[in-house]
Length: 302
Ligand SMILES: [Zn+2]
Ligand SMILES: [Zn+2]
Image (cartoon, rainbow, N blue to C red; front, top):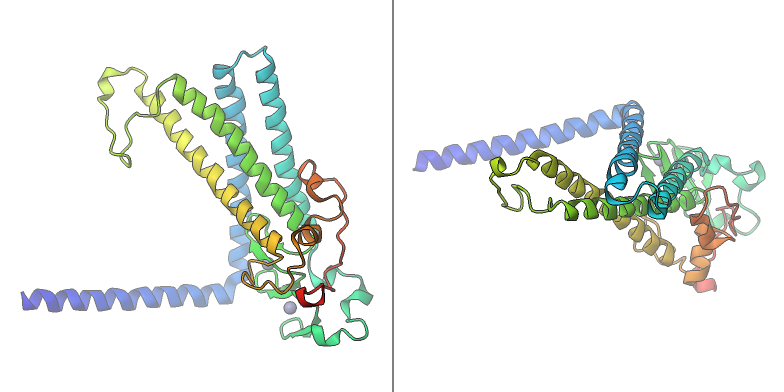
């Protein structure tokens, strides 16, 4: 018994040490080759997301929708219209968000220096070796300082910051909206075919597969419903989280900092711009922001 305990303790210590070493090794490798690593992760994430959107689009509109609605009826046409509109919004916001330069270097040259009396609000970035505006932070993956940096998004292959956060929000909104539509279609299909309660090892449900000739088909559509549920919940959670951050005028980088919270209307204006919630209808709607990202109202000054 004593021998077993000693053996167990040694095994634990050894695995712990190996775990630390692996983590340390990965961290060191990532630090040295982060640009190369991200050069692989970014296109992988983009291709993965494109394939997922493409698959869901074709599956829902070409396979599920004809089974739950009359192909010549108004609901079918409306389903196609909403599906195309949502996917175009997702792709449009994704592209514009990726192409929008939200770095300090994207500012006009004269705005890259503090105006008289504001130098004390700027801080020094040791990597860029220059003074940068308040709320801007260096991203080690983009290797540049980002205006009102929120976080680095691997799907956008860039940072989410002052000038492209509206696209990120609309992207998440339309991802959740599209997945929500698909969830309704999949829910109806599963309900009509009584496919919800087929075998599921996680829910401890088992069924005799020999009694139902359509078992494999039902099992597949039930699992696609579950995948859909996840694809709906993940962007919705992120969207709600982002909206809370915008409501408080905080960022993911400094979640608890509410020193820039100047009231929810102004806070939303700072991100969505002059046209506010209209930006959710089309990615190309122009909505000028009240600041270029170098000057920020603070709570105590309002
Ligand atoms: Zn920097
Ligand atoms: Zn970044």
